[in-house]
Image 1 (cartoon, rainbow, N blue to C red):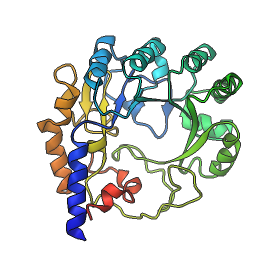
Image 2 (cartoon, rainbow, N blue to C red):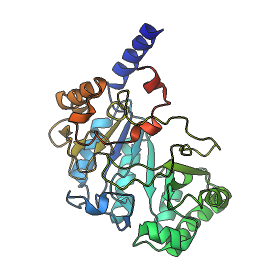
Image 3 (cartoon, rainbow, N blue to C red):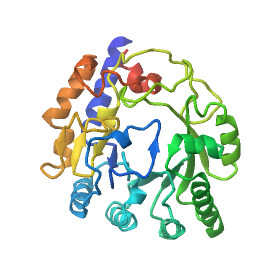
Image 4 (cartoon, helix red, strand yellow):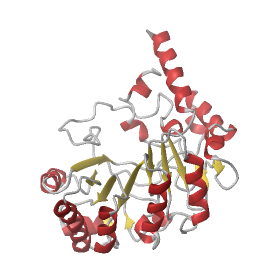
Length: 323
């Protein structure tokens, strides 16, 4: 059985190494919020918007490739980019079969922008991050944001889509299950389930150990609300993390990080201004990191040594095949 698992894992691994399944493209590294669970406010990287030239290079590198999904955001909130709509239009036109996903705090998602996104079918999925059912909870977590403005913008989007009879984009509302929100999660799900297509409860992540521990016990609700609790209580990785084999993150300046939690790009594996996405994905730098993870040498990788991402990967096939 162990030999068969190893064989299946190697086949899966080689398939994943051909081209990333997911891209996270940072339209901007700036954000209008100072959320208590996010490292962005203290991030040393320059706060800037991605240039049209870099974006076009990224898109052209993906034409004809087996890319499934693009996250049109990373560490910043894309609504801060005044040219967000124009950029999404370009991506949609050149990569019509790739699913486009936007996650936003919605503070700057104006009604006009919402209408354009819906009328032009620009997105496949839009996620609204709303950590809290009540104003005081929300504004204590998502500092600098206004609960009333955010919820008004989200409800406008949901109502406009409904009134237009549109199926796209799928609408999701998200809350992170952590100490400040734990008493509101159930009510949050009940409230927003009647409005959005889907409500997600996300696991709290410490961003490689850079953020305070806000988990409150060993069992956390799954990322998709199904009334189930997590089975895993392991405390560290005993398998190679799936991130370097599934998702490529591209910063606003074109540099490529090891994974979405490498917010400072400390583990830089390439630069799209210098190489193609495929060259970077199959390059020496990322393969050296992959090899370290396969050998469970997480201690030598600064952005990985204190990461708690294992808590929501351990039950996946990728992890099971390695054990």
